[in-house]
Image 1 (cartoon, one colour):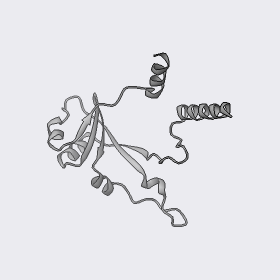
Image 2: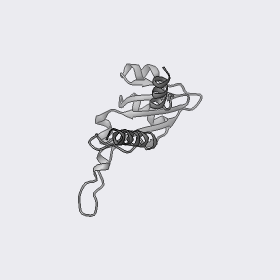
Image 3: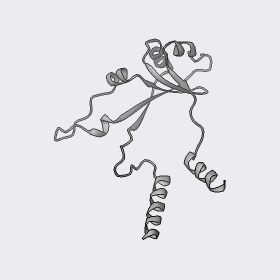
Image 4: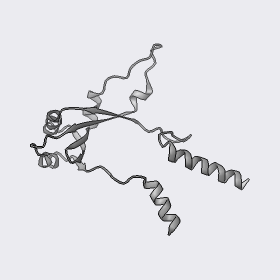
Length: 139
């Protein structure tokens, strides 16, 4: 019996490593992320209007999320299927806007601080779970 539980545990671990997008039974489904590319001028206008919640800057590449009340007005109403039932997948969608900063224009950090925008850089650590498991195994 213990060997079967060990095999089941290994199978679940392997599934999570190979296909992390699959949710386990009983867990909350993760919202699907939609990436929308916008001009840098739209990003600057959103900063000036205090519509931006979070920004990640990676050199000239910028990813940002809008505040929930603004994002709700930007998101289209969920598409209805042929039988008139709303598509639940569209409701749990997360929208991330991406843009590229021109080299001759600075990132408006002062305005972001003034508007209480969370900002930082993307997490470069890859394989965090695998690295943690290896460190624990060898220590």
